[in-house]
Image 1 (cartoon, one colour):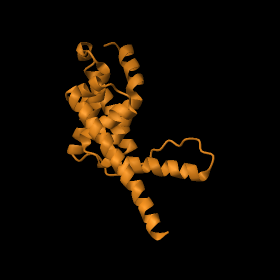
Image 2 (image 1 turned 180 degrees about the vertical axis):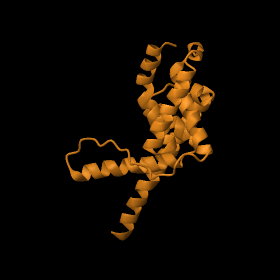
Image 3 (image 1 turned 45 degrees about the horizontal axis):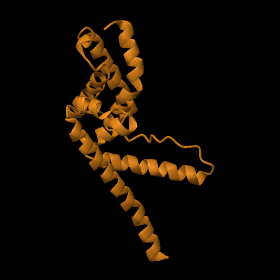
Image 4 (image 1 turned 90 degrees about the vertical axis):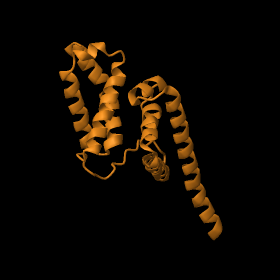
Length: 175
């Protein structure tokens, strides 16, 4: 792999790799360090990358594996989850608050999912990867990825319904 090919691949994948690392490590600083470390390791192995058919999946898998190693070796620092919520342009403060709250709820629910399901939701619904690519990254069969995604989405849906119904039931009782 030439230097130009490597730089182009890095530019194309850097944001996705960062988001994946941040989801796994929580800290933005840790995620940035992880991505840079992975790039360094991959640069050293650049000649071997010529034999990789799907470099995008390989790079993403490298980030995932690096993050798992950091978590397992307790090198990842515990830090408070940074609220990452993109806010739609709202016409009122109330709408912005509701959007912020909803994103926070979904984030909390995502972190309650089993790790594989959380990774699959991140890669498919947020990063936009295809099932085959996710299967390759996570070393799973494509059908297993589909099943895990379906279960994760169903869990998130049911938890959101329970969360919002709880508030409605509470209001009905005291009205």
